[in-house]
Amino acid sequence: MAKYNIGGYIFNDETSAKQAAKELKLVEYILGQIKTADEEGVLKVYKKLLSQRLFSTDVGMSFLKQLRQNLVASEAFNESDIPPIYSLDEFKPDTSEISPQVEKSERSEKPVTKENKGSQKKQTKLKKQKAEKSKPESKDSDSVEVKRLRLINKFLLLAVVTLLLIVGGMFYISTTINSPTILNYKETITDEYASWKEQLDTREKELDKREAELLKREAGQ
Image (cartoon, rainbow, N blue to C red; front, top):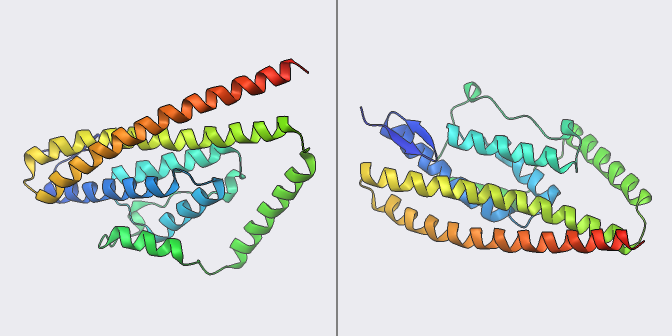
């Protein structure tokens, strides 16, 4: 029985492998949308992915888990404000026209429920408390910028690792599934990986420079 390696995960049948390949394509699309987004933007995308339930393989589910871990680690929200990931036993996903669904969902607003309204009020209150405690000093501004760059670096690193797995998976699947679409996608992802790796290196240098300046300023006080 042929086995397929997609994004570092092994699948025993061609149907599952093709579904995993679709999810890899969706992951690449999402990473492109959130790589410069702030915490609020990433949380919004995460919630919409949960509500649409587009992922049904280990490839997509592991991406959701990593996305949630990054949101928790950002400390921008209470963990209770970040919904848990759904169980695959609860549904059967509709995977047709995946990317257009996500793009459309970004343009439309989800109806506000009482629960969401309460969560928004809580987040607004937390923001006000943080604003009251902050002081208009350049040191605080630099600290916020460093924190923002760290969050961006986390998502860029996730993107680079994911794309690296995609490249490996595409090289393998192209030898087992004779599909022009997959072969073209492999070339696109390889180019995308090189571009994002360069962005990550640039961001890391910028972050190191910012942290050094901040430490130097604090030491001089």
